Image (cartoon, rainbow, N blue to C red; front, side, top):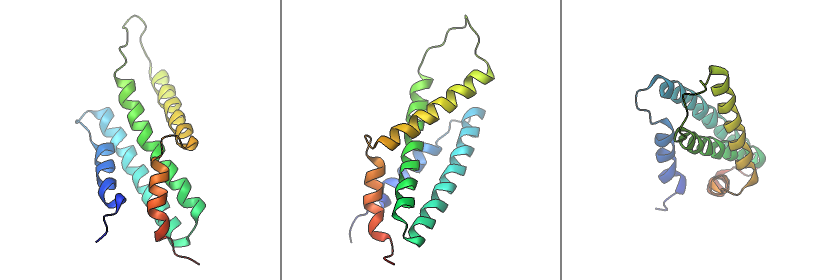
Length: 129
């Protein structure tokens, strides 16, 4: 029996992405991750059923962007903020969207490599039509 990289890593990735400490902000983010993981699953199944290599590549890049986004979110949480200037909801929202865009752009460069690993693992499962 051949050990599949995705069989080994996917549950760990999803668990790492979904892990919350009970905080309401974390719960909302977890719900967003649940939605994005179901979107990922539906996109992945669609790509595999239609044997669309471009769609599969885009789906793998999207998962990599979510993963990078979670890493950057953790990094952002370590930044010490001063109480001198209060941060508002709009600033938090903008910063979150900005870092999501950074993560998307980083995944599109191919420098991280997670999308390539996933693609190489999933490509043989595409049905040749």
